[in-house]
Image (cartoon, rainbow, N blue to C red; front, side, top):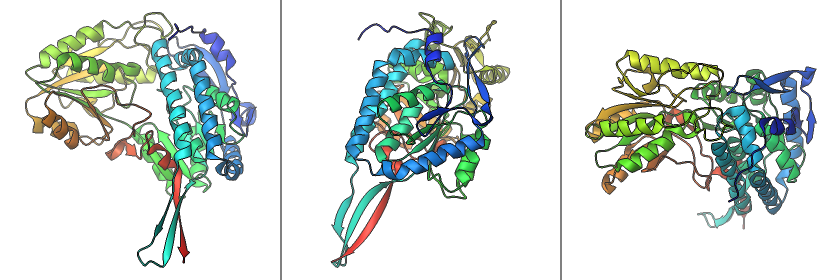
Length: 490
């Protein structure tokens, strides 16, 4: 692989359109309103983009509705080829897209480039799934009728993406929608709209017809989104974000019975048994905790380590995390960028302070650096009280809270004692225990001796209040398809 050559933040930001993308054209928001996009590493404004009003959301949905019938009738191979071309364009422009994500979100360039590759894979995966949508034909039990079963696109979709993976969360939703024959309105997070606007340009260049994808950037999500959900024209909502917002969107989807997919919050347990390979466990912890500065729904939140190895594990983890270089994501050698904004950093500060007040010991980190930007150091806490707020709150920052346990049943009961159930991590060399604990954990995904579960070929999603439905894998396209049954008497 060639050495990355990253353009400057100024170059990549200047290259992205700053308007709304509706019906294949770029246009200003109603009233010409704009909103700033900040650099979390400096606090400075990168640029201003269109700030959509409710009327703009309605205009985008109207464009999607108008394009739906023709797009649904498009040959699967044509939809597949559009996705394949878009995949190739993302791969070709990975360095520029990485620089753009680093500018608006803060993650280090190397990690941002990894996200560009990950994002592209969703388009490649669903380009292959587009031509594999199958129905069926069978004889009904009475022998007098035949059943013809077909799959049809659900219709116009509203896609709402978060700021932490601004490119990949877009492709993870757009890919299956395109493959299934659905049109879309995409509303990206206001902190990171530039990646979505760049993605719209790539898809247009790849040949996506006007109106199939419409991008509405706004700081007034509630005002724009609710009328779309309650109006009866959106047939599908796919949302990634907090459980609190997900509950609100579910309530707003109820009057028009909008089909929903929800990838919500997490409170991931990371369980290290006494027989674990500690080299593997610490490496897994670095991935599960420090990917994206801990700003991931899959991030390990609660570290449960067997008392016989807890001190060694915590010490080794503290050395690794304390050795990471913190700084602006575009600076060479930086491994930990800023958190997304001051509110996000303040939340982490408060959670750490609460844990320390309840008796936790800080092995490394734990104090906010002076200067500009939203930086927080990698932090390891031991002796954490189960009553600490960070045990029941998604941290979304580079903080590892270590607790001890002695009994398998005990740790499983504690791990499952949460409203969330997205992912869990288990480290053991005992095959029977591996299967037993994986089965008993109340989560949608398990990382067994690994800290990474995300893969476009795997069904991503959780149970309980971590969401509904799955994204990615063979089942990812099903979220955007309906079954239609035709009875045929013979």
